[in-house]
Length: 361
Image (cartoon, rainbow, N blue to C red; front, side, top):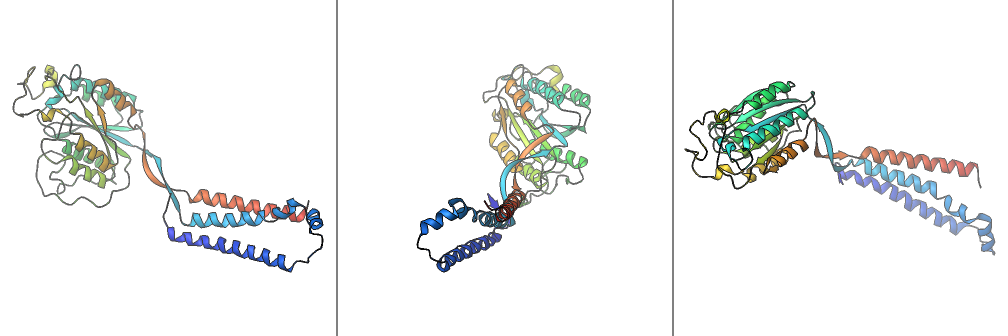
């Protein structure tokens, strides 16, 4: 537990002082009391119950004052708080590495089926948008309640060269900015690119020192590789965090990718790629998920990173992702509870005082 105004805890000295004064007065009264030769007879006449119950109302009032002192300091606890989501932006990697067959029949086909189920599972109240990225990022479907439009776009996915994860995050920011006037578009001078196009340019700036209040929109980013050009995912995440946008990255695929085979419909601009080669990009590191970068994105924006090595895990991850309601860790003030408890103790003390003084037993 923490306190928003801890200096007000000094008010607890008041009930402590009153308790000390009450005890002092009791001791003083004992000294002035008439001394009887037969103390046992007096104790029998007064009764053990009457000796302690007269202190109960005072104890309840003092406890009430103590609770009010704690409440004045505005106590807070860290708890998961529901946050309504008005839109979900799906950012999908359609780079050539999605043709890897380590996930049957290939990564792209498995991702398409999982995303279809994810779209169908949503209610009609949460709008959903679709951002596609390979060598550049584009908004394929603006946030909408039309599930058929989204499914049609997913059915027509084609691959391209390159992986621009950072640009996809910026493009998602811009899609949310069009939807919510409280969210600023991505900054072309921060992170080296404007409008999420994945092309380098501009001068990076220092990341914002504070994170904005949580926006009612989230980004679900699915990728199987590492950023190959344009703004870095970390810089793009800084911009998202500055706008209160949470990003939930999903790393898809195994660490031992096999040959890449896409259907003719999935090839898109990669007509030269067959069942094995992938000319022009060199190396194989782009086929593996950059988990460090994705974890940084999640940590920076307040989201969560997920790993899925096959279609079954991907379906499970998407099924468990926030839909129309998500939760986040926030400081929740509990002063109202302390005030309510203090009021209850005060009323109980007054009631017992009146009852025992009016109707002695």
